[in-house]
Amino acid sequence: MLETAGRKGSSASTRAALHDRYLEAFRWMLLTRVFEEKLASLYRGGMISGGVYVGRGQEAVSVAGALFLQKGDIFSPLIRDQAGRFAFGESILDVARTYLGSRQGPMRGRDGNIHRGRPAEGYYAMISHLGAMTSVTTGALLAKRFKGEKNFVGLTTIGEGGMSAGAFHEGMNIAAVEQVPLVVVATNNHYAYSTPNEREFACVDLAERAKGYGFEGYAIDGTDLGACLETIGGAIKRARAGRPPQFVVATVLRLSGHGEHDDASYITEEVKLEPFARDCFKVAEETLLKHELADRETIAKWRREFSAEIEEAVGRAQQEAAPQGDEEDWHAISDRGLIDQMG
Image 1 (cartoon, rainbow, N blue to C red):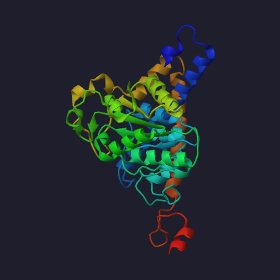
Image 2 (cartoon, rainbow, N blue to C red; image 1 turned 90 degrees about the horizontal axis):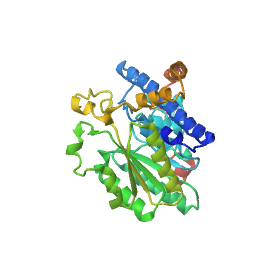
Image 3 (cartoon, rainbow, N blue to C red; image 1 turned 45 degrees about the horizontal axis):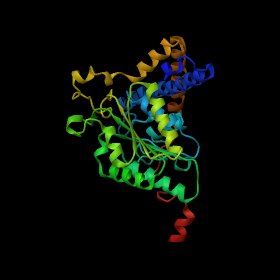
Image 4 (cartoon, rainbow, N blue to C red; image 1 turned 30 degrees about the vertical axis):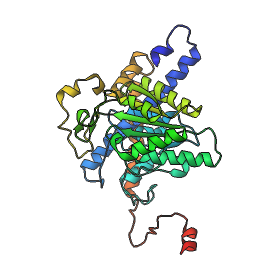
């Protein structure tokens, strides 16, 4: 993206806009990296119940998937999408409260830390990372169409392992049949938990599956923030304009275990030397420095500021009460009046 912006004939305003978007995306990536380092530390210290699943190495793909969405759009992220969650508007405090079980969090301390969202704001809570959200997002888009809404898009993510689940195929099929404005961003991080690509699928390029589904498909280097912003941003624009559903496959390496409980010892040294094994965060940081969009002192300042915000949010969440089983109203439907009528 930066090279394109610097070509002869590009206006100063265009270059500035591209630079601003790259900077914005990098700041969300930095916030995510710092926050997930804190989460891992809390997990190792026994402060978090349940698992911790970080998006190290996938932040560029995630942030690009949310950065171009607008009010009225739907975002259905998965377990490694904290960068996208932040870019879509999730607060640091919401995340801290959920991981630490505060009853003041969006899930009121009742659910696992990965099943959080604010559906009324278009931010959907993850049911499962194994394909379910493709169908859910497609259904939500159909509902918006039935209600007469206009100019909306839905975006969800999937890992290459989840692409083998039946719910994923069903969601892709109905999305194409109904021509809903859906963008599916798939991240091939080369391992479905510990299962390598060669034991997951036989096709050469996962993006080639798009044609069979009736989607428009694109393949990108998920370690290149500029490429992620350009291609995923373009897919969102095309879906909003009425083109067929969009499918983007980004290639990366998961730079951590499946979760913090997993040492990732199955990832071979040979794989770690592949071009897709680069750390997208470090690549983006080097790009900022090379093009003088930010200096090391500025980046260090941002990190300190984010660390302070995170510590404040974590400290606050730690002081808040957990749910009390004998005091909670555990009904699944939020409208108590409706429940009373049905009873």
